[in-house]
Image 1: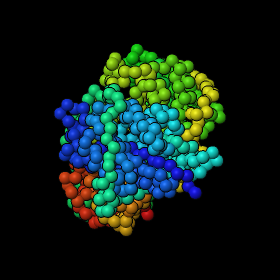
Image 2: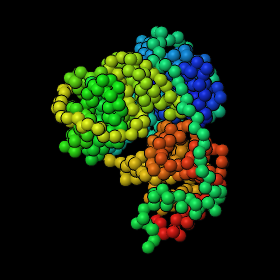
Image 3: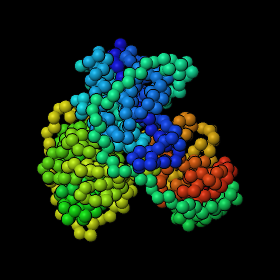
Image 4: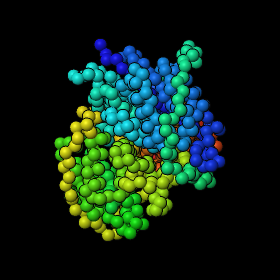
Length: 269
Length: 328
């Protein structure tokens, strides 16, 4: 029998990175009102892994976010694909630095444990699509005194010799790396190992009925040490149009020859 | 003193991005009264590597070895780097902005109670120490205050060009064989599988990459771009739309959540150029966009473009290449 265990998956409401980036007037955050919001691709995969893990182990998948009132949308999306509980730490996300976020998640984990809902496995994205800090999961692991695997793309929970272990697999510089780590543990997820499911209509209806636990931050955030955000200067387009349609093919191959990217050895004698 | 983590490739040579990080460290040293630049390498240091680092101005090459660091563990390697930091009296610790570099710097920062800035492009002052780094996949930049010591950060790929120093450093090897706490070795790599031949970093090291996006139109419609890829001896890179739709495997994805490429020539076919994708291909030297929309961001940012249906244009290019005897 697979070991039982609850999973906490942490997500962040971020501006949709398929659109142009616009900054807020004070230059301290990205204004996503024009682009719309989403959760990062890594976190969509983390949610999928959380749902698959509890389907195998019989535990509960809880989704957590730190964000403004609107971030409920991301919690509902995770509930619609199979998470069954949600916690919302209400605050302005751009006022939290990576250490602040880790401290808030750790506080939720400890409080839930005190209530008898221990999260043996905590999943996060490898990095947030907006702030790109690459460190929240690692800081959380130190806060909780747990081991951490970073950048895994597949995760499963198995019985080990001394209790349940998480088996996490990800790409390393020399190939695919496997970790076997005793629970409780923290794992950060990188996109690519699982296919996030789309919410069904019944899933969405069910998600609407799940009560969301609302919390205030446990401490005043120290902040991200941000001086300001800036956009790169707009570069005027300098594109040279080689032509339209298939008639441009000779010009394209002329360009390849000019750039010297065609190996001369490949040319006909 | 400035300590730079140097990562090595499968042949034991310093990676290009690590040499860029050492170059960045030297620039920082020059701005800070010439404080010495040291390197830390976990694993073997060949004479070639030592000499190369010396030519980059490195004073000491700290070599960390022993059973405790033989297999990778984030906490264990970070602990070993902390040992070197303490022994060398370093106030700045940096690495290349690779997966490993970001991970290890995050561990050291968390253990030292310091901030960590990922993917730094430049610095604008020493007191206070303010760095500019990539956020939103490179679409915006953040100016960040790194006031704590050690100042810990990673350097974004291609933020600076790797250049040997005018004056070589001593490049003296200093050995470290730290004994690590068992709790730091709990999350440790237990096995490494060799990548399949077609996944072995071919995309990130390719000189030419042919890109394919939504415009291709379906999993069964890749023949033309695959032929072009083969004729050019290139690698295929795809947008997130393509992998999300299941048309091609994830390891071919270029972008913020895929590979970051820096080829001499990138040929995106039917890719609009969303931020997510641009984050992965903006380091290409020359971009030739093939797109039906002349206003697509990929076209306006490209060096060259051909406007029209890729399924008419790409076969014509393939034919022209064959006619001229290439890839025969």
